[in-house]
Image (cartoon, rainbow, N blue to C red):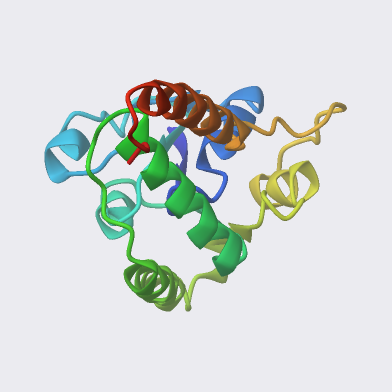
Length: 188
């Protein structure tokens, strides 16, 4: 029988750290983040062992496919989450050349709507859902208590903290500012 844990937090809420922590606890990563029903069809939920999968909007479907599973909603302060989303989108725009809209009202609406939706869904099953603020400092104690796992004797594995995006943006800006100045233009 499987022991499944599904990370259902929005991106930029500690989902990469959660995945790493679950791996340390022996939960094998079963699939890349699941964003659509086609991906969901590729996962064998019946194979034995402890595993974890990251998804957001499909939490109802995975709950139906894998009864008895546990769900971890990674959360963080909304203002720092919005700032992190802005930084991520600026990174995509400048360094990777991909257009991403920055709409803080839409981010705020998404944040509230999604968390309200998850909390309403699990309202009669509070033992199946853990809300954890990894960015705010929660870690092993809360996660291990929820999963019934022993607490590792080392620090919580913080990952993908965003400083690298800032370094890349600053480097890109400095490089392009120098090039633009040499021909009499300012960078975009």
